[in-house]
Image 1 (cartoon, helix red, strand yellow):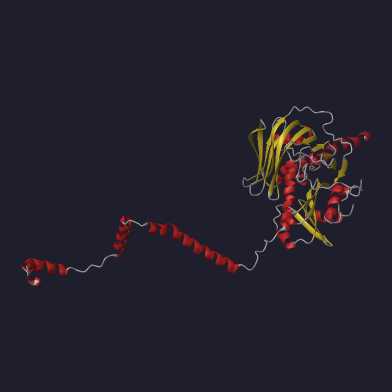
Image 2 (tube, chains in turn yellow, cyan; image 1 turned 90 degrees about the vertical axis):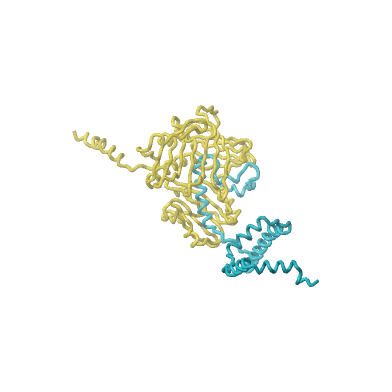
Length: 324
Length: 144
């Protein structure tokens, strides 16, 4: 009898322990509307080929371009029309990494996957909306790319829409998405112009094999761009829990700044690095809209962290920064 | 012949001396002296102006030169105002690098959310032609 006691206890306890675990960020809330649940799972299961237009704000300008997208679950291939400024470039996500090919430079960049983050951020935005007391209103969405859709609008307590999602109900594929700023203007959107859910997928669609191509990583780009601006090279170590997503040189107010964007399951931040000081009073008076900032100087250089992480986390990050 | 004593003049004098004529004359003299109303006079002038033909010179003065003169005077006043308040070259409006950086982060995150696996803000400048990136050297790729 005794030899059955402990296994029996374990059998009884394990389900209790498991059910007591809080929902991880990656879990879909069980009470989410079915159409939204289908949308969130479609990023791992959907298959389609289509053409979409993407637009977002970049400072005072709006950047708009067209992409040709092939998807097979988590794997994607993105190309661009002949008239696009990105003609010839190929972006492939193969479930492990992102490869971006530049034909004019014969260069392949190895980057972190973005697809998983996109789905996670979408779920995070819906979860945050509900925590902030926003409502999700679902209605008929009309036709997008020739397919009838359901429209899920996330609205705040006053009825202002903050996000709209047009979902093809059978596949769960998001055919159109709008993100609105606090004044109700469209901050960014994409929309499929045509799509087919029965794509023909070749065996090597999600590979880039160019002999003689130069292989470049984000760390290489960060090092070179820091050198280009005469800045020290700083990078979070791979085991920091934060992943370097992109690096670019920008010139706000005509001042060269190195911008490195990091992501993690807990949130995202950008590390700005530049020569010369920043005004702390202006930084304090800048509207944050839910973002936190933390800045410090080292010699002639100033660093600024901007993100949706708590300030304590940003302060911890400064301790982890160092030369690679 | 003396004109003052002509038969015609005598006839007129006799008619003016008639009692009825004298009565009417006295009655008219006794009427109260009314002052003309300014409003009435103004109204009368307006009516006369309507029917009075306007010369081309007057029209030119009214519709062209008068407004032009008014605008010129206003312009001179404005110029004088600006010159008096100007203290040298106009200073460049204060920049706000800090706000630009916060805004840049927000734009980049929104772009990532909508672009997904596609082109984001970081790749926008890297068009197939005209990219600012230089050729990689062995020093740049020394970490590989």
